[in-house]
Image (cartoon, rainbow, N blue to C red; front, side):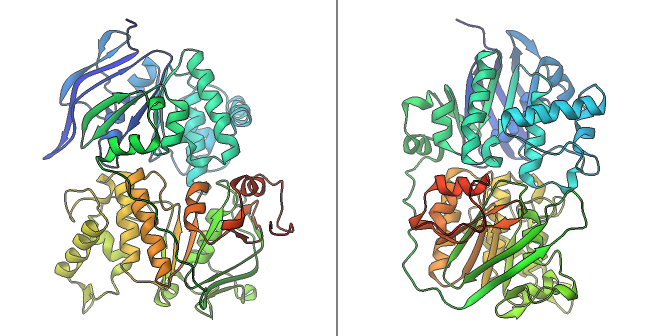
Length: 507
């Protein structure tokens, strides 16, 4: 038999009383694309950190090319030939993209920047090497991480949700690249919650549940429903359809909005118009970096318009262009940002206090002081009702897996019972079971009369959720398209600029 490139035997890792990994056995063959499947909190991220040297196992052993190794640090992993793209990125925000590359790659800045541009063109991962990381969207940051790994010529490449930043037209191109890398001798550990992608790309899959391996399978021999059943231990419920209904009062309106950011690397918005009514979900599609961050900041109140730019943003019938985020929330607005750690939650604070960030108006304060009992009850209710896998309300937000933190933040905002809910990337990095739960809750809220705006790079998600879809491309919005009358290929044409804002809606 061929010696595995990487072999794990009986690997375990605990954090206090929580056993994240329990006696994991895993073999990654040379020239293979190997999927790691599991729900949020199943132990996937911990396992990858052990392989990459970020964490050290409590028990068990690792072998590389048949020889026992101790991977004491990411630098040691890179020396062996292991590269990794984390779900939560490891980039310095105050540096430029190319300066971040220089931290792990020798070479002149100009040469590295040119190589970055070439890789970006080849793989459909374009990003400006001279842009500061703090100006980039989540999707653009993931592109940087992927390119940075490819520039190290790895023997084993670990990818966590790599297709979440790509339009449908570019996914197959990335898959072709990964297949070429595999055929050239690179093994790939591929983490994705898109089961059809795993079936199309991967030749092996290891399934984790509650920190333990429950099976090794060939994903090509099973359909997506069977794989989902192996992951979560039960059959997936069917999607909840949106009940036919007439839209109600206008809850959000943008009228010919023009906005030029001060940041030269940000995307200007031009003549952006949309209308969202009670009892409907409006989806905003688009490739990351086409103005999603700027639009979200203007709608949420993080960025306000100048007084000469008034009469462009309305919520619940009021002009809110110059109001801050708190004032908009008092009108019945709630917001789930795409950046979970930083904008959605404070990593070092417990969930109890993270709940207070936006839920304090729900009588969680008493005479200006925190009512800790009520705050704890709020956090416990959110954890229970939204199936947040954590040790309890005093767990720090940064200790949760990405999907569980997302469930907590979405639950926190829904518990505010807003009139208008804005959710950016609602299921980014969330497993199939949790994603299905989130989508069903959003549809139920829509059926109860809430107005919901969703920005997502997952076309399948937008088609499942939305009554209408608009596409953001280079800071302009397409006309609204009725989801039931539109095909993904047409949305894709808007996403890459083959159709424009002035084109008529499709019949």
